Image (cartoon, rainbow, N blue to C red; front, side, top):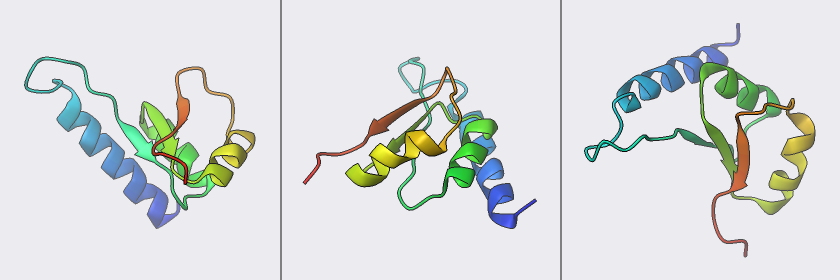
Length: 84
């Protein structure tokens, strides 16, 4: 497996473990992965590792990425900032 993919998996699992108990107010916390400049393969690795949603801040990539990703019922793709 690609070393970068292993790092993605390790980081997602570590962060999910930290978020498991929610925030200090007892609210559930979702892990949203910002996908700026990341390949479809890297995004899929993050999804498989457990991210709850993915977000993009470049409008062109936001439009292109749904076509590169497999349909996953529990993952949403959102734009994460105002478009300039």
